[in-house]
Length: 205
Image (cartoon, rainbow, N blue to C red; front, top):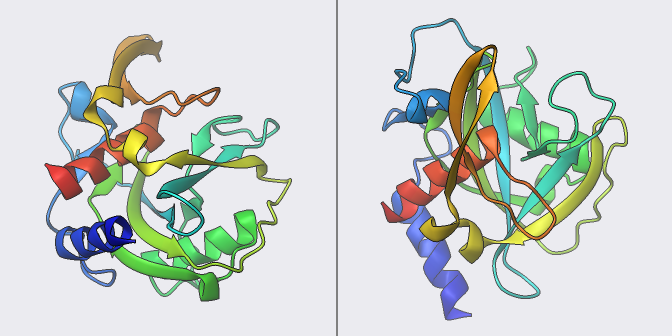
């Protein structure tokens, strides 16, 4: 499949090394709101994986829907990921650990391709995002304590600038602007949409 090879070649050329410092840029919730990134705040380190599926059809990205009983961001669409634990060797290991904990896919079934810009959230996290190809043969086993459902969305749709909507809402008494990329009955927005926009700019900007 030449298109798949071309996408992987592009990612290997444009994404930062997995073990690099990610020093080529910094993105954040403040990008659409006139706020600096990085802001200088003390941030809690976190990591996520954008799981890329290249087998059985056109390229897709895998997402989770957070469980409705969670205290933080219930029901929102996200990439597998979370805060770094003391035992993690670094962001890459944290992202792989979270993928296994949240959706049951072990590191043996993930090929890390690269990382893109760190992302500062309004809630005080510095997220290191990675792209990883899911190798065939994995079984999804979502943790019901964290994940309500898992779904895939077309990579081409998510990377199309025409689908990068800008919306606004009131948060803590102030109007805030954010990206949204609704797909079918799924509402991808906020940090996850911001990460997708950052990935697009890294690859095609």
